[in-house]
Amino acid sequence: MIDYDKHLSKTVQNISPSGIRKFFDILDVMENVTSLTVGQPDFATPWHIREAAIDSLSAGKTYYTSNAGLAALREEIAKYQKRRFSLDYNGASEIISTVGGSEAIDLAMRALIDPGDEVIVPVPSFVCYGPIASLAGGVPVYVELEEKDNFTLTPEKLERAITPKTKLLVLPFPNNPTGSIMGRDELEKIAEVLRGRDIFVLSDEIYAELTYKDRHVSIASLEGMRERTVIASGFSKAYAMTGWRLGYTLAPKEITKQMLKIHQYAIMCSPTTSQYAGIEALKFGDEDIEYMKDEYDRRRLYIVNRLKNAGFECYEPLGAFYVFPNIGKFGLTSEEFCTRLLYEDRLAIVPGTAFGKCGEGYARISYAYSVKHIGEAIDKLAEFAQKLIREGRAK
Amino acid sequence: MDILLEMLEKDARLTPEQIAIMTKKDKGDIKAAIDAYEKDGIILGYKALVNWDKTEREYISAVIELKVTPQKERGFEKIAEKIYNYPEVRDLYLMSGAYDFQVIIEGRTLREVASFVADRLATIDGVISTATHFVLKKYKNNGCIFKTPEKDERVNTI
Figure 1 (tube, each protein chain N blue to C red):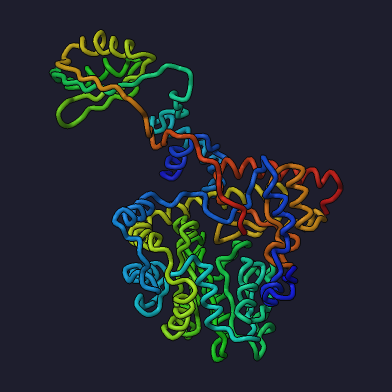
Figure 2: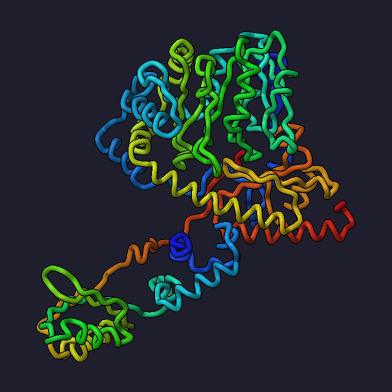
């Protein structure tokens, strides 16, 4: 019998599985559960985009594309970024079409990190940054964001986290799970800390289209930042295209050249059918984005209002499609709260600790659901809160 | 308040309170606006879209093209009025092109529809001809695709 622990990669083995695996194990087998857990749009991909993919298949476009992706796709990505976020990237030399935003994150980490390099990861945030940094030989350094700062990264916190080994800062905004965003002024303060230092930025802008007050600002658009920034973005959230696995990197050509080597050997190219769908989305999908964003915005206002009326303290999220209510007053851990809610009222929301220890005292609620579904779910949550209050739990 | 109409057109079951929250407006103002729309005949009604094919009830609909002679002074209006007052008529449009009125009829049986066309429509003064097309299958009506809603197949991701 092989002693797998002895032989399998220590790096991989040392990556801890999600801290709340137990909760998801229960959730996955339980039936008749009302869920507010899903981290993807409830819209199907707009029909004209699906049709473009079907047409490409009908026309027999079933081959690999060039490693970086179809030239037409990269050209459209460049135009789109210019049109919607005033960013200038050269389609031919500064853009790689990737297998979702996730691969874009992986490419950036692997192209930038040498063993021992430190990667600053603000938490709570999407769970992939630390593990991917570790796989690249880096050392994740977690910086805990707080509700009092609207879950943004402050320059003071950044300064404190920087060491001579710091190589990369991850900026995960608009943020999953908090729904927080960082505006131009806040980013400028971060940029001020980074200028003159050899620290790069990985800006994960997968939710860039889903902001509800001001348009998303990329740190790459601030003075002196483009040269040190890799933007990871994609189609999943903006066009409801999660299953297509289509994303991209935007980075100076020197970085892009190195990332392309990794992409070339590990991936070859992103799915050809998805790339054709992507071209259609970029050319004719602006209205789809607006339509879905308006829908999310109404649900956002609705769910925040309902949560507040149900007695939850809730920071107003300004991006993505999540709310991150504070459940600390009920005197249960996040996991206890969510597990009881699941068992007793068959409602599923995600414990904040799924996104880092500092998510303790919070829960993530997705509003990528119909208003009817949200309303019924919050009714249940409100009843649960009342029950906890009757138990004398709420402070 | 176009947004109010758009929201209600998509989901007439939204309550004034829900709409008020979602549009950051006052509940009373939303109620008043809806009342005004109803009064002015801008909002004409709220109905469920029923797929009768999935029920036991017999059901048939037909599209009828009518050619008519417009009447002096009143043009098409008088004839239109005679047609649309029949409860069997679900939709009535004055059309450009090869015929004048498009009438959409709903009935329980083919015989019921046929006799309505023969006895009621064809006999109206000014009607020159009728052409009846029975609907074989409904795929989409009022923006709604006639199929069973799909189960939410999204997996629990974080």
